[in-house]
Image 1: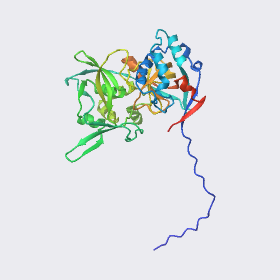
Image 2: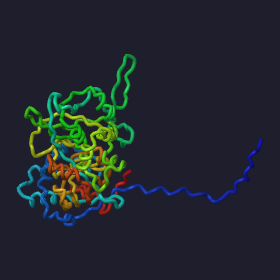
Image 3: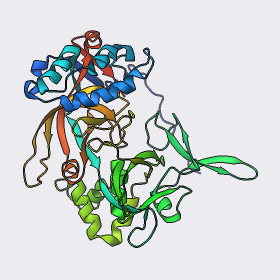
Image 4: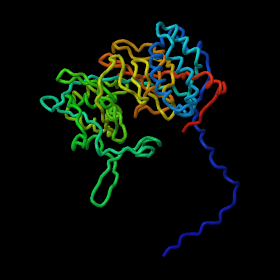
Length: 405
């Protein structure tokens, strides 16, 4: 039996230093003047002021010593009391007065993160056709919250970030009670779930995009107009089906938009269901009255969204209610025209499963075809500047950073 040779004894060498740790990413914050915000002096922040008033109702409903949220850079509720109370009496009669309000109570703080540009998309409320009963073309159910859905806060499931809710199905038998992950989209579509069907819509692709947008308006065949508002989610990971079509070579990145994705699904009916099922996430809704026609459904902050003035952000980094100045571009409603300048004040009032990152946002554009034409094609870069109460901004050094992971 051959014997392996014995290696010579190792010769001691100089100690090896451990590899240096990669620097921790930092969300950089720099205090700036309003005069440094291009086009601020000619902007019209009246819609943002109206939206901010709605946010203030939610902010002032909390205890004074509660953090506003995110990484904590915006301070506590008590830091926002003066600006919120003044907002309710601030004039909305002209743009100059609205600008004076923000200039009087806030200081701009510009955000940057590793030299990367901000990336912003858009969303809107689609309009669907539906019925209370299943008949004719009305075959696709829109579900309310299932009776067996259990939401466990603070758990981690698959690739979701720590702190995200964990949704499970509670299974009961004669001998045990146990939790299992809630079914994915394909299983729900095939097997159904123990949930009320709010209504049936006449187009499964419309139903899919209703889930992507998170809310929509449904014109029922009895003449009633109602809102399908976000109520919950199955806890399965969100997958953008646009990325699936890119990977398969069906679309290019240049032509990718909500409109091109929808056109592909319509023109490939034999493959559409498999593509949609690649997104395992599934949204459940509640029925609500439309109410004031000029505003949208309630966002994550619990207040109605304002077209062109509400922004969805990553709540790991940013608190709800904070004014955000975006300096970038956005699509023109006419797809034949080039993108236009977008320098506007918005209020962080919502979040979304695809909104991840310190310089990531989703602009709410409103209801209907024109809003959809903008939102569906928006994938634009922008510089992001938050407005903080002057006392909060004063506690920041002229240049500061918040370590984030």
